[in-house]
Image 1 (cartoon, helix red, strand yellow):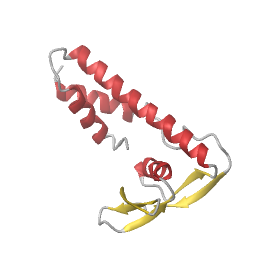
Image 2 (cartoon, one colour):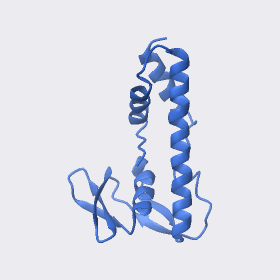
Image 3 (cartoon, helix red, strand yellow):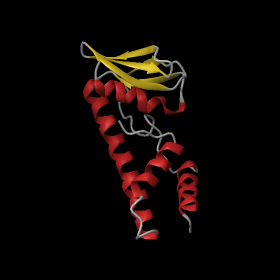
Image 4 (tube, rainbow, N blue to C red):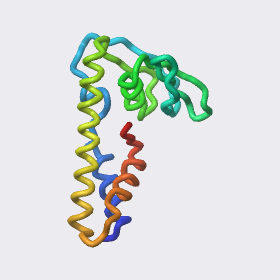
Length: 142
């Protein structure tokens, strides 16, 4: 197997229904508010007086998050560029959901690295390959 085939097989595996969806698969609270999203790619902008700006690729502010955890929640939920998302009203629930999702992302990276090292034991490009797979899946870990 080549590295290219390894990458393609990993991407195919996760795209074929083996990737949990954020926040749907992690959200347990029913006390949520809806947030309208711009259906654009968002990036984390600067902190201004404790709030975080979420910018589009043209550096135009689209949303302001009240804290870094809420900003991460919005960024993770925006992966598929939905029109709106549900956010728990309770900030501790937002934190819990974000932490659980980040553990999940970390577990994917560990699994990819383990699989890579078992097939290519003499290579030290495992993190580069994991990043390539994450990028292809439009996954990001903040």
